[in-house]
Image (cartoon, rainbow, N blue to C red; front, side):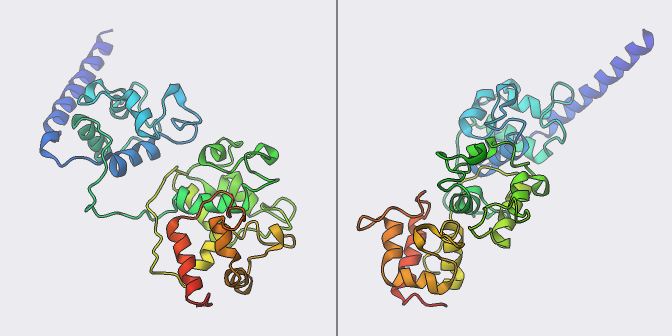
Length: 323
């Protein structure tokens, strides 16, 4: 009994010293520039807490979701980190620490504390702040267009058909589809395995063409970096509209999925430059991506941005060159 008491006293003494040290080192939030929720705080919660089988929208472990501002605020008391359950969890050493396997870095914990002390507002960075482009693919910008074009198609994995109970038309439906994606592990994710499978179980199935090596690399890289649901700033630039720099990738990632193989949709194949030029020169390309003259919108998801449409227009206006 006496020995156990000495151990308790030792632990309490160390904890008290650490507490004093932490209090001494904590910065004054009022003296620090406003922390940006969108680019500084949200990514910490998304990659450290709001992941599959934890606090993402699908798993919602213990009823908590840490993927967006509204859900995060359910466990935040503005101005008071000490009363905020989310913050207390990420600094806890004993009572259900979060994340359970690897604590957040000191810098990450400090940013969250300062953000809470500053009022936990849904702040965004000023326009003159330098935008840091992530080194890994963005779901909305790079991954989703590939899935919509090649997988979430009619009679396959769209919301109506949901072949095999798989729906690839949104982030939520993808992550709910039979654990196809294992965040941080592209090599063990079923999605990557079927994209690189043999002729019998490869996806997309024949007669569609398989995804290119570059497209598979984009999806794998996205998964390896956490499979986060991000809406990223567009990288589109209307001053760049040559076939090699802009148009080719645009067609491959948004159109080729349906318009390839031995039975392309509508009898229109878009696997070569000559095929793309043919419908560009006769007006069908712009008519379909704008849904003009009674033509149905293509891609069906309407995923092309105004910038991408302008790139196509400028390329066609310049002669639809193979440049």
